[in-house]
Image (cartoon, rainbow, N blue to C red):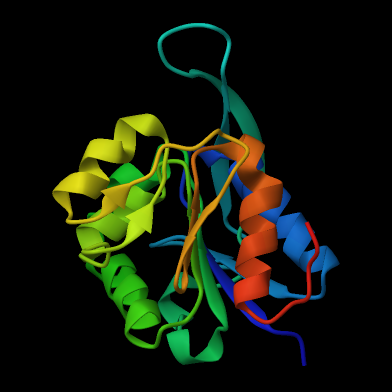
Length: 192
């Protein structure tokens, strides 16, 4: 049986930070259940493409429609090997959902692998799981990590930071790095 990964996403999740890890993990044999509060398998979330075009922050364009692969209300964290939290704008409002926060806390309580990219660590700060942990994120989220008791680590956008069961990356250029480190935490043999 394939190892199962839970992926938390919502409307205006970053397109590359959702689709690339989703497809990469599927190609490696993982079952990836992508869920969103108040939605079921087959429901659509809309994505956004964030790009770095020389302005003071990223630009945003409409991305693709992404069909969810599982029902949020049916999530039982005991069924999953790891948790992947996408970035984009969805973390800013998903952190208002009590069950989303409980899911994250359950993964940390069981010391299961957790990956969060870009703005995804906003969910980790709200869940209260970063105290004493090193993590990276999109730079604008760095102060949130510090305020949550974590240590923000500034790295290039194509890198990942690993601290115990947690792997984080600043943005979609780090898709390869975060996925490789995440699956290694789940027991895969990856050479990078």
